Structures are given as C-alpha cells and as structure tokens.
Image (cartoon, rainbow over all chains, first blue to last red; front, side, top):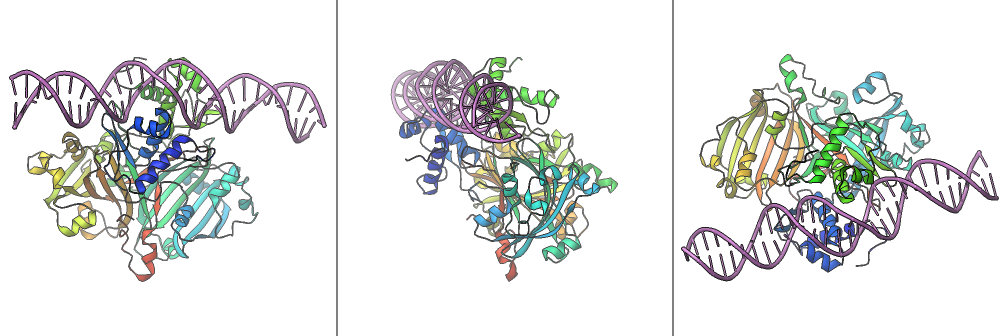
Length: 277
Length: 277
DNA sequence: TATGACTAGTCGACTAGTCAAGTTGGGGAT
DNA sequence: ATCCCCAACTTGACTAGTCGACTAGTCATA
C-alpha cells in the first residue's frame, strides 16, 4: 500500500482496517486478525499495530479482549465518520448548507462576562445559524479581546458578514486554534425572543449547549451558549469502556446533579453549577 | 511510592502526576517535567511515561506539544474524577443517596421493541430514580430476554425491589457487563404523565437520554430512555483534539440534524433519526 | 533591525524484543 | 460423557533503544 508521505503508519493502517470493515470484509462481532498476524501482513512492529487498533477502539469501531482477540464492534447508530467538530463542518459533511446571520456584535458587559466565566474586555457576538436556510440555532459567543484582536473579521475587517464565515477557521488562522473544549448540555423552555428567532411555537423545549474552548496554551478562546431547536438537534455520544487490569474502567462522560439540592428552596436556577469547583 | 500490586505503572504514574497537579504543584499552563526527566525520576522507560501522559491528555488534564513540552490544561468546570458511568454511582460519589422505585416490569411489546431497536422477546422495565428521595428521572429500559435470563433479579428472583439495586452491577455479575454504549441526547416538553411522575409543573422541558449498551461480544444488553428533569440534570463533556501530523484531528462528539429536512412538511417527529444510516 | 544558521531539548513514530495475564480448545484421566 | 489440566495463542505491560520533526533559544551576518 503506497503510504502517503507524512501520514504515520499506525494511522494509515488503522484506516485500512476500518475501510475493510466498512467494505464488509469483517462484520459486527467478527474477530480481526491477531496483532502478530497484522505485523506480518503489513511488515510493521507490534507497537505500531497496537497503536492502530487503539485508534479503532477509541472510535468505538473495535473492542480488544485480552487472551481472546480484537473484535469488530457493532455498527454505530450514528456512524458519521467520527471526525470534526464545528457546527458548519458537520452540516456540510451531510450535504447541507450551513449559513449564519450576525445579529449583534458589541463589547461584552460585566454581567455577561461573569455568566460566561470570561475575562474582560471581550467581544459579544450573537449569530443566528441556519441550515438550508432554516433557522436552527442561535449562538451567543464571548471572545476575549486578547483573541479578538488577532482575528481581522472581528475588528470590522470584513468577512464576518459572509454567511459562510467560520469562526473556528479564523481562530486557526490566527494561531489560536481550539485544542480543548468543555461542554455542558441542558434543556429549558424557549424564551419568547428565542422562539421568535428560531421560528418555533411556544411552549417549546430548547437544547442549550454551553461550551468553553481553549487553545494550545490553555487560554480561553471562546465561551458560547448555543440554543438549539430541540426537534432539529440531537447530541450523540459514543462511550467506550477502557478496562485495565484493576477494574479501573473509566468513561469520558460525566453526569451532574448540581441543582438538585436547591430544589426544595425554589432556588432551582439550573445552571448555577457552571462555575468550577 | 509503594505501587499497589496489579495496577500498571503507567496508570499509577498518571495518577501521581494528576494528584501533584491537584495539589497545586503544577498549575494551569505550567510545563510538566519532560518525558526523559520523568523517566529518570521514576525509573521507567519512556514508553511508559508516554502512556501515562496520554492518559492525562485523554482526560483533558494535560496537553502535549511537539518540540515544546507537556502542559497542564486549565482546570475543568466539572472536574469530578473522570471515571465511572452509572447514574447511581455518580450520585453516590457526590455523597447523595440514589434510590429507585420499580413502576412496571412486563414483557415488551412489538412497537416498543421497534422504537428501541431491541430484539424480541425482551423485558420492559420502568423505574423512577430518586436522588435524596426526590424524583429526578425515570428510566424505561428494554432488556433482551437473552440477557434477562442471566440476571436473577429480572426473573422475579428478588433484589429488584431493593431501592439500591443496580442493574449494571447485575449485568456485570451475570458476565455481560457493559463495555460500549451509545447515547443520544434530546430535549422535549414533558408529557403529563412524566410531569406527574417527576413532580414538575407543566409546561416544562425534559432532557431525554436514549442509550444503547453493549457487552464485550457486541450484543445489546440494554436499551434505555432516561427522562430527566432539565433543572436537575446536565450532560457534561470534555473534548480533546487529537492532533496528528496530518491535520487529522478528531473529536468524539457528533452533531446531528436528522429531523431538519422534515420540518417544513410538519413531520417533525424529532427522534425519527434514531435508526442507523 | 532583521534574517538566517545553528543547537539543545522536546515530543512523535517506530522497532524488536521480554514477560505476564487471560482465553480457548483439545487430550487424558476419571 | 464429564471434568480437569495443559499447551498454544491472544492481548497487556514494559524496556531500551533509534530516528525524525518541531520549538525556542542564541549568535553571527547582511
């Protein structure tokens, strides 16, 4: 197999196995070739094979069992390639047209900054996001000035009005690409203004994704509250248990019951656990 | 440091670094000791150190930068240890008392099985989950008979009425522990019956987590729809970008816009994209 | 003041092996 | 026929090294 330059072997091997699975050569529950077989087959060391398989496991495609072998996991209910992150990228990958309309851009106030746990000064940016021209979500972002200064579009430098403008691409170009993020998903009733923007009849439930994104140096790049029409948005997760010798299994997801204790007092503000510990 | 038997070095090393971070020895943005330093310090090979650090990266605690070093990521907004999975485990780890009340247990019907993508015959189990005695969620599970037969409690063998009964523990004991799962999070308005069960005033938004769990052989163990009071539940995620030489970054989360296309026709059934592709 | 070459140090990828622990299936004893 | 033990095979953990790519300095030169 002619390896493209720069792509590590373990990744190309992982992708080859993956494409074989998709091609139906192996199917759900089948045992994949053993590590030593794959070594011989592809002329690489076992360490490389293991790294390739770990990729597959991390993506929920394969399951390893000590002493037994590596098996194909069942097909995911949302096998949509596992990559990428941004709203628009996802939409585009599904053959839809993602656009946006700027509703407001202004310096962020004090209350907002506190709510978003964002430093000041910062830029407040409200956007309506549309998929195939239908309102689908509205995003309220706070971007620290420190970051905004590096992004020409946020300096009135144009480009922002382009309905296909991508904030994440802009961050990337500015050298502060997002490397890490945290999200909190909640639901609530749509407020009137939201319902009007999203063109939904009240009462209706909306999904709210609150996300804080960080660059490689660990600095906050964007804090955003994304309000989605609940009928047009789902949040899909694939969880894999990493079993290690000591029953020390860990999953990535974290539940939370922050507000439960406040309930009887009527102080059920829902997101008031947003702050760190 | 006296390593407990059976715990691999890379895990105990990872935990040691982690506890040093928590102790404040290193803080957000600081550079951790280089890999070779850690090798010398702990008398292990570099491969082991790398595995330890990869753990931290996977948990969103550290960030590696080629040529530069390994750095402490900022503290998470939900730094709650990263482990574990089940509803009750989470609650217990927060010092709360998680109980449940069985509302219904019966053979599953055809429509239900189709909706949950679960084979027949299967057991339908409805439970009200309480935290500190307050209704917090209600779970509707479908468990294939194939699995249920191996779980004594589901055979009327008692134990199910125990308010602290754990279905996942039971699966574990029966040799079909959950290794992989998929979740889809949505929101909707609470139905009257749900509102009554959860003791909330309508109209109200509820978060619905639909989860399918699989054992090591890839067989479905449980399909469950968990309906949560939106003010008492949040769904937290930590995302880490895995950058590899080729700009091939991948995150685990997946958005979805399934129902958007149906909207204009009025056929906005929300979850009808639950089926595979 | 830039610019470019050099360098020491870092992580990324990979190799080739060891030993341990878990699984499976077959053969032999009962 | 059933049970138990063992050998072969699997993944898990680990070592000790190589080479390459990238980073952040320093320092001489244009």
